[in-house]
Image (cartoon, rainbow, N blue to C red; front, top):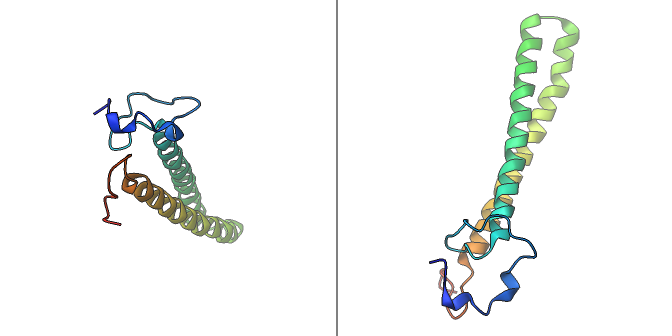
Length: 115
C-alpha cells in the first residue's frame, strides 16, 4: 500500500515538510492531509477543554448562590453557546475536508462517488 505506483507522478500532493511518514492509508501519501486533520482535532479539543472549565465555573457560581456570581454566569453561558457553535463549525469543516480528500481519485482512477 505504501508504494502505490499510480501516485509516482503526483508531485502536487507532496509536502515541503513531512509530519509523519507512518501515516499511511487511503491517502497516506499526503502527510499534509493528516496534519490538517490532527490540527482540526486539536482545535476541537481545545474548545471542549475550555467548555469543561466554563461548565465547572458556572456550577460553582450557581452553588454559591451569590448574586454577583449568578450574573457572571450569563456571560459564561453565552461563551459556552458560542463555543458549541464553534465546535459544530469545526466538525462540519472537518467532515467536508475528509469527504473531499477521500473522494478524490488517485491518478488514473474513477472518483469513488461515481462522478
